Image (cartoon, rainbow, N blue to C red; front, side):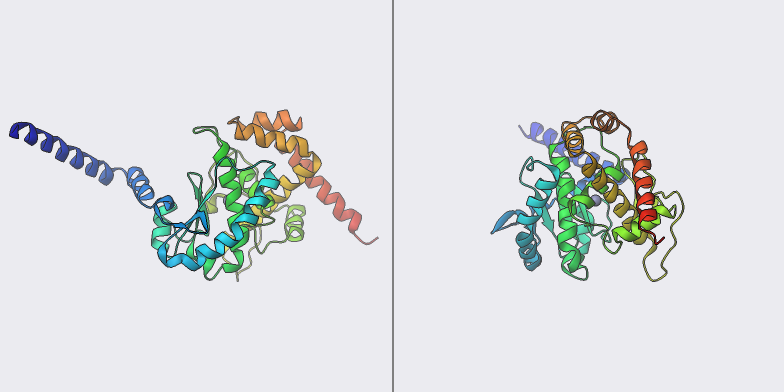
Length: 293
Ligand SMILES: [Zn+2]
């Protein structure tokens, strides 16, 4: 008996040592462990709306989120043309450090992230950037909606589409400070976001055909990102207006786990690049039509 105990202990210790070694050597495993440890679903649920989970000190913010959530959810369901696959979960933080650990990027500077189908909100959205709370929450719920339906391991749609969809569905969440008029002018001037097939793009990685001019008073990365998001959002909105049936058909295909490019072509009868060129030429014609004679 004692020998078996010793053996079991030995195995247990060896397992712990191996796990510790793996965590020490593999930063991706370390990150995954930190994210799992900080999963917002482990935080208490807000009594009035159990979809909202919060750090105890973030009670006031959870209350604000719970007040917004029903209309944000209704807005996304209307824009996406379908209910959520399951009740969406939102995590609300007061600690930048914990938020940074939970968002899987280790970066507390991002206003919100959707990870594993859960929207995580930075403390800034109930602080300095409170005026962005409703738009950003609605934007994230668009990501939660799409990922909630997609089967695990399904091919990811390109980021320009998921971000454009989220901006469009939230009426501009994530593209604050860049109006449609400004974004349209930037497109006419050749400062066009590149609709490439990349599935993950960090903020610095967003590509423009021509580098847009910078306002020295604003943060360069934020400016680029919001202009890119606004342009993508306008294009997705244009696609929807052009052919709503095709737009919804595309969403249903993506939710079923189909690949983006063939689904887009089946729905719209053309590829996204071709329609992007149509969108640009319509914008240019519209501006000529508006110009004084
Ligand atoms: Zn987004």
